[in-house]
Image 1 (spheres, one colour):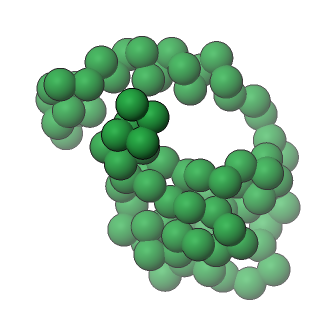
Image 2: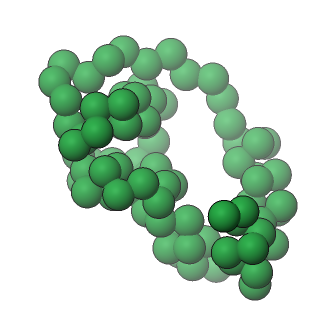
Length: 85
């Protein structure tokens, strides 16, 4: 489902613009051991660690379950937007 259909009251383009302006390319090392129930999601935690960012925005249930790993909070998109308002 497209984000604009799911979150009709949110100007999703302004959120995407903000992410684009604030983004940078990170080279992350693999985690020493798996964290997520789905090991392919560990790369997102590794990137957050490398970038020293405290938040990942995702609706992925495996990442959400790993919230708190190394102090990294995983938030659903709506929770993130609500926190920014």
